[in-house]
Length: 299
Image (cartoon, rainbow, N blue to C red; front, side, top):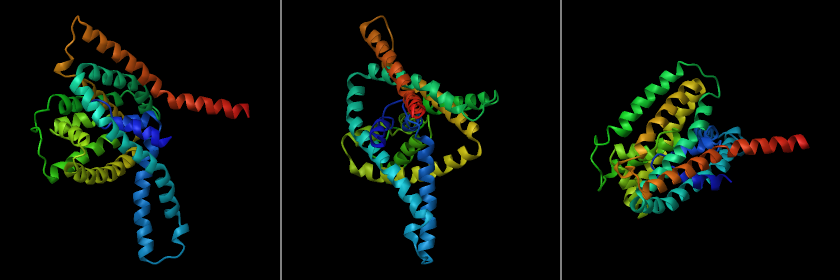
């Protein structure tokens, strides 16, 4: 099941406006994933220290058990994400080239439909009015970065090794930080078209160093986010929610000009359908919990 969910989450890495980490939240896997990555790194270092000291019974140590349990959870999920990225990259590339307006309206519907669940996640451990200031500040900062600052960096077509690593780091941030859209970040850095085309064409000269940056980014960012969530959950998620909201305008571009025509009507209809699907998608875990609760009561 985590493998299948991972394939869907892979869509968030390349679809404008979506985010792999938001899909992790929707599936109820976000905190578990962050904790698993962080605890695995910590346990690996602890295991290595014990190995150097030549301690006995390391196979049955708590570190070994933690690493094994996390591997069983993370490997199917990460494998699914990787396959999802590869599968969807050509499809999204085709849709954006052939039906850009309709595709962007579909993404907009998916994003709007996920807002209620995300807001509920923000308020899960207590919320006060002062956190609206944090949301507003993050929204303004994200709006500047993702919408009004797109020409800060020129479009990269022939990247060097460092630029490919930065590409991986940016994608890693989008997976780990909910609401940070990889497409928006990569567009601001001039790397989005490079990311989609390199995936579609399996350009290993770009993807191999990008994978290195991706691994580095996942380890570092997940460790930081895990610490922030543990120390100040509501503050952290309020800031992340503001960033998520700031991404919404970046989904639309000059191709999305509306008018009294069939193209606009079809695009709006697609947006409504994707909005409803997103709402249903966001409640999958809720329905699952209710079903399990009823089943346990009947026993």
